[in-house]
Image (cartoon, rainbow, N blue to C red; front, side):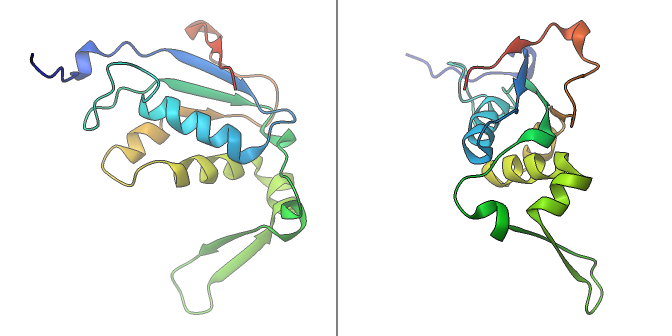
Length: 142
């Protein structure tokens, strides 16, 4: 027996769409990270990007469980002294709801050279519309 090793040209990239309306953030992000890495395919190879494209709609309608909606904070640092900025979940949800899903999915991906190419395959939209109808995305079951 020889070990199968997928090549970039062998990978058939599919498109999936996820409606985030009423979905729990962590469970949805874990499923999206699995599809982006390609672990749902039998040809998964760790050093080759075998993942698929994922479109997330209704990012502004995501939900958290427990007390996280009141206590969760998002931090960013400018690089200057005193440049640490903190915003609550409600503030980020109001201004940039795409950032919430993007950070959750990125935190679940392995930190290697394939992390950024995988994140480029994630398309997030705050509303219900997306411009990727030509790719004929399928619904991703959660």
